[in-house]
Structures are given as structure tokens and as C-alpha cells.
Length: 141
Image 1: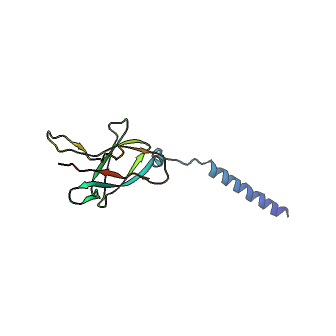
Image 2: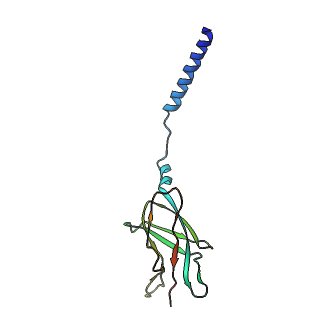
Image 3: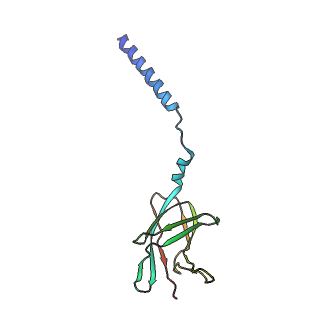
């Protein structure tokens, strides 16, 4: 009987030492590992409202620029696919949505966003992708 109790205590001491050594170890985490928790997926569809021959249609292969509000150099560009869909990862904050047609030379550029299109995207913490559809209008000339 004492022999079984001795074995039990011996086994218990070994298990406790193993538990303490495992729990006492610090897990080394790289500082960049937590950055992925700060990026949120934004996705949507780009539609052209006034295509000259198709009317309302998908905005295929269209680039959209997102500029973090308050930071002139914080620029993120994404391009829609052949169905007009885009996906981008952004950190929390407000972003100005920019779509301009630049003609070049001395010709003035113009805004491609539809008048009813929100110009600011507010990215907040979310476990699901944030839906943000974009409507644009081509130049009348």
C-alpha cells in the first residue's frame, strides 16, 4: 500500500514540475504578429452609372485610391477585377475615397465618383468584411 502511495506521490511531483516548467516558459511573439489583428477587410463592387453604350455596368479593372484622413502620404490603391469587385485591407480610421480622371497636359482633371457616392469610408473593428460599394460616372464630354 505504501509502495502505491509512494509511486503516486512521485508521479504527482513529476507532473507538477512538468506543468510548472511548461507554464513558466514565455512564448516569444514577434512584434509584427499583432499587426494582422489591426487590418480589416473592405470589399465592394464598382459600378459605372452612365456608360455611353451600356448604361449602368460593372466598373471593370478600375483603380480606386484610399487616403487616410489627416495623412497626405498614407495612400492605398486597389483595382477592381473583371466583374467590378475589389478587396482591400485597411487599418481602423477614416479614408477619403479618390477617383479622378487625369487627362494630362493643361487639361483639368475631374471627379469620377457619382454625386451620391460617400467620399469618406470609416473603417471600424469588425469580424466580418466591411461592404463599401462605389458608384462612378464617366465624363459627359
